[in-house]
Image (cartoon, rainbow, N blue to C red; front, side, top):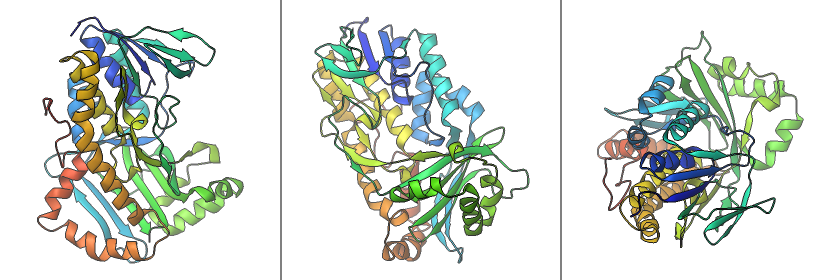
Length: 386
């Protein structure tokens, strides 16, 4: 393939920056379009799973990211009141990296700029016109040899029709309280059936934490209209160890309201347009794979473009990611109602059947690989591990 392709990417997020950095490092001319005046991350904490860390190594940012994040060896959740284990997954000899989204974003942005990517801010791309992008103000951008939609679940370019989920979450980053006795090497959660869920995830080496509180979409407005202190008291009563984390808020605006959808594109490319990350497939965050899916998409597409002509490369990318994406989408569909739903039966099955099995062979090693992101090969037909 040509060594000087011109690539247009919509979306200056994790997937777009990772792909841009990878392609620019190979000598391609890359423009990344973003609607914001200055590139900035959206969201709170996340976990970079072992598969995502492999991609970060390829990009040359793993060291910088590891210096910021907190290694977690375990994910554990218990039922409110009884303390009965409802989730118990270990990473084994590996680890996940809990990190604030801003820290991962900054590392990828720095690498993309260092490699020669051009960031085009204040440009909302609304359509594709052949080899060009069209922006909201009527401008035309291009032509490009390949076009990539990395603009997320709200993409105006992707044909993805996803289904909104009935539950979302409140997210925020806070300081880790000095008096907290919770382990800083694990993701800790407490469940009240499937209708309530609170979580605390280590976030930074400073130390920080990302906290989340499950909430029905229909209750978001009610939560915002009520005094913040009411929610803080209810959350503290639900999980006393949660109290020093949620007491740090003085305004509803300090928490991010996250809504989730579920859907997958059958075809992740169309001609010279490819879709990656949430523009291609989106799901609930139960498996903690969102950022990793975007990184894997970027790796697969970037690798394919290095080996094949553009239109064939985009098809190879789609085939490479199809099985992995399908498997995790199906697992997400199955697991989400166990943790976020109106059901009274599913939490009982979770606590009394699935949780005990999760610690026994052969289920324990399989769950370890599920959490790590490689229960099946992350990319098919391309080199892995990279």
